[in-house]
Image 1 (cartoon, helix red, strand yellow):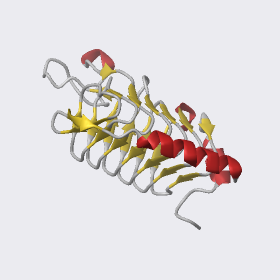
Image 2 (cartoon, one colour):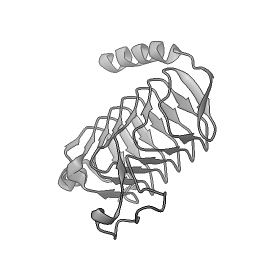
Image 3 (cartoon, rainbow, N blue to C red):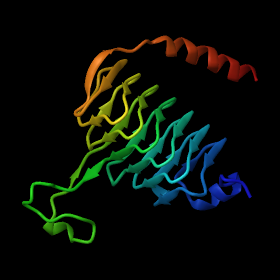
Image 4 (cartoon, helix red, strand yellow):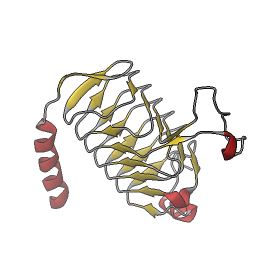
Length: 189
């Protein structure tokens, strides 16, 4: 037995969509497979949690201990994105004001849950231990340093850090040339 589920096992899970060359650790936790779409060439490592509506593109890596809480509005990850370890991405969150109750064991009529989709753009990279809050759009090519709190949209091809995250400088677009070379090589194989 390997550390990853086989292609046959993954097909039996009942994912909305499952691509080819997908490696999901047997030590991950996945809830509501029927709401989760996974593209080609995806690796999901040990102790990751996937829950709710999630759409994962192609050539994606989700490192150990990362949690994606998609809720009903969803988390959308575009091609070539990379999520480092111990990241938490929320498309749903309780109201922390004290004006309403919190937690999933309380009926909705006593809570004020914030729910909004999260978009992670192509070639985005999110460093270890970052937190992404509901409604955020991480633009194409954005990068975030470890321990950043991502509570607002980012600019394309920007390098961001901090609590809350803020832009430090521009990020190189050389990745786009590398992507073209990579895709040509993949077509020739």
